[in-house]
Image 1 (cartoon, rainbow, N blue to C red):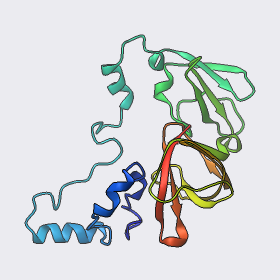
Image 2 (image 1 turned 60 degrees about the vertical axis):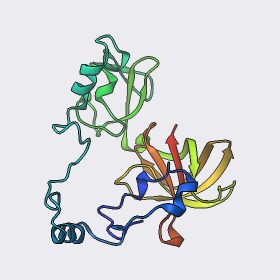
Image 3 (image 1 turned 45 degrees about the vertical axis):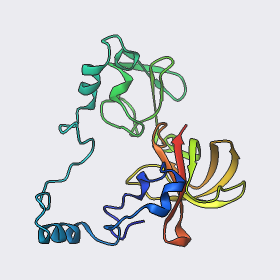
Image 4 (image 1 turned 90 degrees about the vertical axis):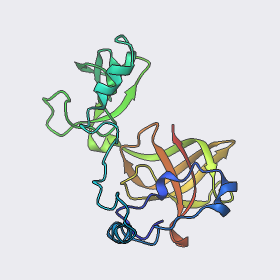
Length: 218
């Protein structure tokens, strides 16, 4: 991990070819963002005071659904209306396309529940957005596909930490199975909003937060 916890980018490095590692250099890993900007000013770089982007850099207003509308057919399943369904299977409303929702989202869901409700799953096969409680949003295991190792592969019963989102805290995990490029982990603490398609990154926290590898959450 980098020294600046607010700007650490190690989460995005899991997919690098392991053979490249000996030639990699990460010169700002030991610097904070302010120190990096100060050094850039000293060198006369024009980007020293450039405003940093947040979220998706090519969607400055945050309306990613509009970007999809511009590039997908009008009848694309992700933009086609479908049902809101509870974890018990009850249809409680209709949405305008599941592409407008993410796992863990709370805004824009049907009301009338005594407790807050969240998107706990998205089912593209029937365009359903599944809503449930905070407890139902928490997961106790995660499976990674397309796993890439930057360290010797972990076998069953091996322990590590796994981070399931860029800004989330890594949680302790134990390897349940590792077959080909698929890895299943039991989590030592429930993790909120485990979203398929996001990166799951494995760390050795006892070794300074060394990236062991990672994969795509299934």
